[in-house]
Image (cartoon, rainbow, N blue to C red; front, side):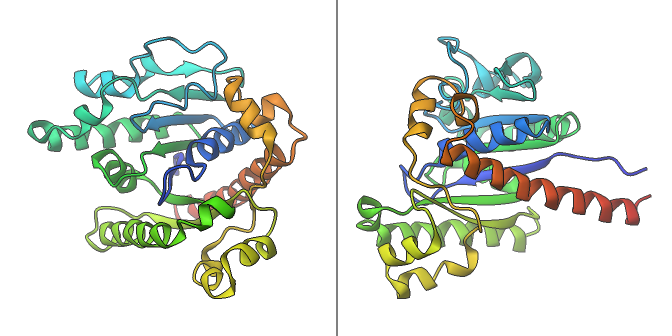
Length: 276
């Protein structure tokens, strides 16, 4: 019998400050608005997902790091949000040390895979927010995700560092391609999410036609505009859809979630044809 499993989306970025965590929080919330059971897993050591989703977050939520260290069920560490269909698994304290301990690397990798598999049976979508650096946690996320969403900030300050950004982007894509080639992952690159610009014309003007042509084919059709309401929402401890659902940023993330929802329904229909 066909058994639906959650789509696991890994959100990564080639440079810090690209809006990766904002994207993880707000895309997760948008899925929840559409009543998809959603789990946001914070895989980044700065532990910021909880701050942007819970008005009064626990001061020392143990989260993923504790569950990994003790090899425990993560359900007890998940934190509910004001959205009925969204829960957050915080990173907790010391995640970097937990995942990068060479003495337990193989065991930790197995536990992480089994944990995501178990959660995938209980959710429609799992969103993994990752660190910018290509560390052990990001590698684990890439190995276990179905899709990779890459956040890139496109505004005048970010454009000044775009050479570094493109070099890091190539490194990230090479890592994903290497995992697929080795058979360790079936990861698909969903595309590049452009932040802080209203449309492709604006992005092209900022980057220049030659530079923009390098990524044009990979850019998602939805762009995230510069929207102060997104920043306000984060510091108030809520996703943008809970702060001002009519704001341009909130609407953009709803549009992005709707794209995934339609793709998921199509995928489920195709799977049922193969495995009735």
